[in-house]
Image (tube, rainbow, N blue to C red; front, side, top):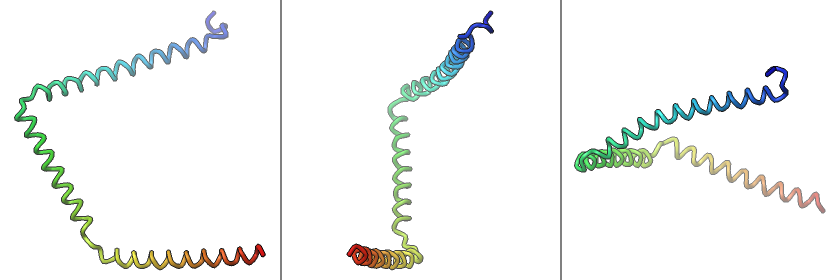
Length: 109
Protein backbone atom coordinates (compact mmCIF):
# COMPACT_ATOMS: atom_id res chain seq x y z
CA UNK A 1 0.00 0.00 0.00
CA UNK A 2 2.85 2.45 0.84
CA UNK A 3 4.67 1.67 -2.42
CA UNK A 4 1.61 2.53 -4.49
CA UNK A 5 0.91 5.89 -2.78
CA UNK A 6 2.16 8.88 -4.84
CA UNK A 7 3.40 10.75 -1.75
CA UNK A 8 5.32 7.76 -0.33
CA UNK A 9 8.78 8.88 -1.53
CA UNK A 10 8.18 12.33 -0.09
CA UNK A 11 7.10 10.91 3.24
CA UNK A 12 10.14 8.62 3.38
CA UNK A 13 12.48 11.51 2.47
CA UNK A 14 10.90 13.66 5.17
CA UNK A 15 11.35 10.95 7.80
CA UNK A 16 14.97 10.30 6.78
CA UNK A 17 15.71 14.05 6.92
CA UNK A 18 14.05 14.30 10.30
CA UNK A 19 16.11 11.38 11.62
CA UNK A 20 19.37 12.84 10.27
CA UNK A 21 18.57 16.24 11.77
CA UNK A 22 17.78 14.69 15.11
CA UNK A 23 21.07 12.77 15.00
CA UNK A 24 23.15 15.83 14.11
CA UNK A 25 21.39 17.95 16.74
CA UNK A 26 22.00 15.25 19.34
CA UNK A 27 25.69 14.98 18.50
CA UNK A 28 26.11 18.75 18.53
CA UNK A 29 24.44 18.92 21.90
CA UNK A 30 26.80 16.29 23.30
CA UNK A 31 29.90 18.22 22.23
CA UNK A 32 28.40 21.53 23.37
CA UNK A 33 27.89 20.05 26.84
CA UNK A 34 31.61 19.23 26.99
CA UNK A 35 32.46 22.79 25.93
CA UNK A 36 30.17 24.17 28.62
CA UNK A 37 31.95 22.07 31.24
CA UNK A 38 35.34 23.40 30.11
CA UNK A 39 34.08 26.99 30.23
CA UNK A 40 32.66 26.43 33.69
CA UNK A 41 35.98 24.98 34.85
CA UNK A 42 37.85 28.03 33.56
CA UNK A 43 35.36 30.29 35.30
CA UNK A 44 35.94 28.44 38.57
CA UNK A 45 39.70 29.12 38.47
CA UNK A 46 40.97 31.51 41.07
CA UNK A 47 41.62 35.02 39.82
CA UNK A 48 45.40 34.77 40.26
CA UNK A 49 45.67 31.70 38.03
CA UNK A 50 43.48 33.24 35.35
CA UNK A 51 45.54 36.44 35.41
CA UNK A 52 48.74 34.42 35.23
CA UNK A 53 47.48 32.61 32.15
CA UNK A 54 46.50 35.89 30.55
CA UNK A 55 49.92 37.36 31.30
CA UNK A 56 51.63 34.37 29.73
CA UNK A 57 49.49 34.75 26.62
CA UNK A 58 50.31 38.45 26.42
CA UNK A 59 54.03 37.73 26.72
CA UNK A 60 53.80 35.12 23.96
CA UNK A 61 51.84 37.50 21.72
CA UNK A 62 54.38 40.27 22.29
CA UNK A 63 57.20 37.90 21.35
CA UNK A 64 55.38 36.91 18.17
CA UNK A 65 54.79 40.55 17.26
CA UNK A 66 58.45 41.39 17.82
CA UNK A 67 59.50 38.44 15.65
CA UNK A 68 57.14 39.59 12.89
CA UNK A 69 58.54 43.13 13.08
CA UNK A 70 62.08 41.76 12.88
CA UNK A 71 61.13 39.85 9.74
CA UNK A 72 59.61 42.97 8.23
CA UNK A 73 62.71 45.01 9.02
CA UNK A 74 65.04 42.54 7.35
CA UNK A 75 66.09 43.78 3.95
CA UNK A 76 66.50 41.03 1.42
CA UNK A 77 69.18 41.84 -1.19
CA UNK A 78 66.97 40.41 -3.92
CA UNK A 79 64.10 42.62 -2.83
CA UNK A 80 65.80 45.80 -4.08
CA UNK A 81 66.58 44.21 -7.43
CA UNK A 82 63.02 42.93 -7.83
CA UNK A 83 61.68 46.36 -6.88
CA UNK A 84 63.80 48.05 -9.56
CA UNK A 85 62.69 45.52 -12.17
CA UNK A 86 59.03 46.03 -11.27
CA UNK A 87 59.45 49.80 -11.57
CA UNK A 88 61.00 49.39 -15.03
CA UNK A 89 58.16 47.10 -16.14
CA UNK A 90 55.59 49.56 -14.78
CA UNK A 91 57.19 52.45 -16.66
CA UNK A 92 57.33 50.39 -19.87
CA UNK A 93 53.64 49.51 -19.55
CA UNK A 94 52.73 53.15 -19.01
CA UNK A 95 54.70 54.16 -22.11
CA UNK A 96 53.04 51.42 -24.16
CA UNK A 97 49.61 52.48 -22.92
CA UNK A 98 50.34 56.07 -23.93
CA UNK A 99 51.42 54.96 -27.39
CA UNK A 100 48.26 52.89 -27.80
CA UNK A 101 46.13 55.89 -26.89
CA UNK A 102 47.92 58.01 -29.50
CA UNK A 103 47.37 55.28 -32.11
CA UNK A 104 43.67 55.01 -31.19
CA UNK A 105 43.22 58.76 -31.54
CA UNK A 106 44.93 58.63 -34.93
CA UNK A 107 42.63 55.85 -36.10
CA UNK A 108 39.50 57.72 -34.98
CA UNK A 109 40.41 60.71 -37.17
